[in-house]
Amino acid sequence: MSSYDDTRPGDGQDPEPAGSPARVGTVVWGLIVLALAALIIISRLGIVALNGTYVLIGLMIGAGAALIIGGLLSARRRDNKSTSGKS
Image 1: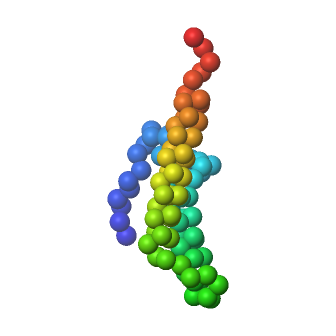
Image 2: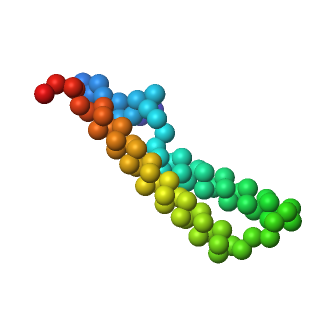
Image 3: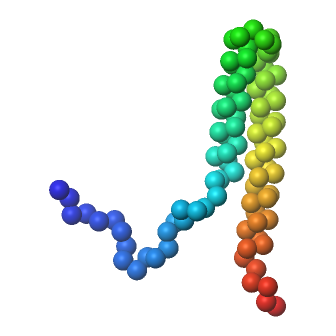
């Protein structure tokens, strides 16, 4: 049994509260994995013949756009929360 305790007394701030929203990057990469899995299943069923290069280019363009837009929206939301409304 170890007596090592990494908690700090007096540190009342949790690094990430339980109700915090998901990070944009996590959501985008999750969607990429799901899209790749769906495309692999579709191509294996023979419904559509896919060119791997074009699929990867499309996914990277979509992921880049989603990361940029999500980052901008997240930054905008943070800016709106940080103001107290007082001059």
